[in-house]
Length: 124
Image (cartoon, rainbow, N blue to C red; front, side):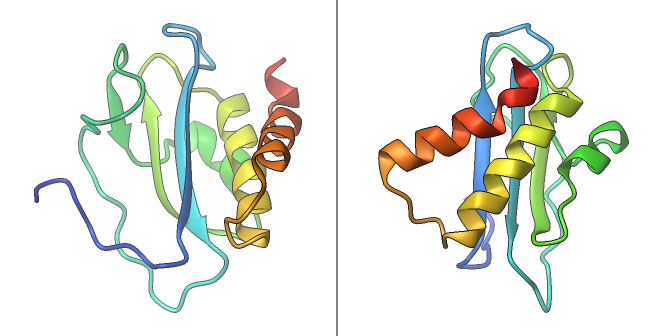
């Protein structure tokens, strides 16, 4: 199907969609613990993004890249909104992604929400 791609089985992605129009309302970040080969990141518009009120494109804009980088995760996919993404969003997504990758994506719901709340501290 168009828009689908085969990903590494250990890849984990986190997508955040908050209040439409707020500068910290959207981001998508995914990665794996380590990779011998990484598929090229998709390009173009992400039509199925959770942020339907924004124009979302695949890729990690330069202004958010430093906030998203972590030594323990190889970034394999990212998307940002034209109006609704920020450094704080990608900092929170990277923190959450590191937590999920460290736990192989397996967390109890209450631990998952606690980790998300902790990762969003810069957004508050």
